[in-house]
Length: 579
Image 1 (cartoon, rainbow, N blue to C red):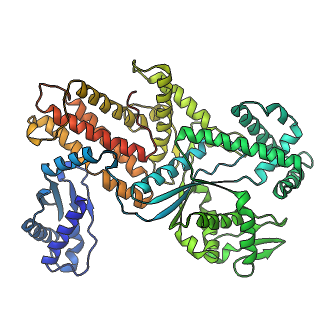
Image 2: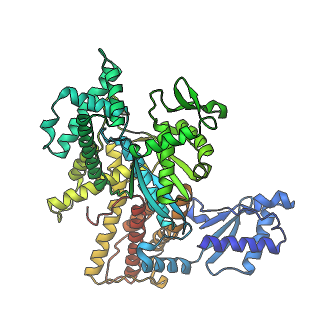
């Protein structure tokens, strides 16, 4: 990367000036104002006090040394303000970068920084017998994007989903089903009807558990134990039916979202292992308390958690220890990433502390990526009360609003629906991914579906516009070709130059997003890139056989379309060619 060339030039200059003994970290940033150069460093100000020199004078000495061995990629270096050093890249550099984009296509932006690293990432984690609500869209979008970004950085990634197919939530549901006695009526219904039935039963069971009129709470807790022990055939049959329906339902949503997991883990396969791990470490890590087995987190500035309850049933905590072992046995990971909500922060701190004693090697390799709440104008939703906003409802509602906005006349109804779904999902994902990890998200239909400004559809529309231009260029036989001598108009060159100054940055954006597990860097970059392209588009006609500059403009449009699509792919957003 050009960044490495600049860093080496600065290091060589410091060595020549005999002030490199401290091996300083060289910070290179892109100035916000493009007129201030393509890169800027404050290294002179960082070292000035250490070498007892005026920062600006030191900057001038560093610049003088760099100019002695000026890399061909740099056209100009300036000292600015109190001692900033600004670098301007040469037009030839941008032409070569543009050619590279066209040459490597969908591979532009990829690197091998994480080659050989095995990463397992767990995300989404919906529970069978419960609704897949809009809250699940957040970890799903973040997890899928982070997984793709890590692959772009060379890692070998396994996508995993961990689901609670045991627990009180299922007992509440099955209790209501047994009382309702109408499950036979739903055996041959559609998947949606079966899912709606399960949702109603869960809401009913949750209500009586929280507000019992008699022995309902005790009955549900006893039923929970029977489900755990698999001791009654009728209960087992309902359980297997509901579990199957839930998994089919989740798969139908993943298909729309573009998610495909490599491995599904379930609490039913981690509970016994979790129990064994906890019981093996009683007296060393865990202790008995009132018939339960606990981890006393207060000893480490945390809080106490129950790992096996007084009825002898392993809790989520014990199962999570079993899951860590299951994951490693299955994949032998170098890193284990878990995408979960902010509300789980304190829980995960306790879990990782307990894990650090039981499986120190796993705890060291585990990182938790937290996410905020996704809410609508009506506020947050609670699956405990049954008052949830189903993800499918939100996607369908968004999709219908998109169809109303679509203006393309050369698209049939089937294509329109397919494109509308891509735009709807893109709008939702972008609304989530543009935020810094951990920040709450409010989905606003009007803003999120706008074809102008900070939205997923704006990016998709920019891509569709570029592809339309390229189709026209093909029809008029205007070929893509980069030749700086073609550009004569100063106004056109200014708009072109801004776009070029952003295109080449994509690989370093991908690298940073991978290092920090942060898709928002890519989302922010793509908006700036699309804005620069649309400004370029507005300056005048791009495809014109009579215009000598046209082939350069078409080539730049092609380069933009490649980078934008590559970036959208990393966000898990599809790029329709027509809108």
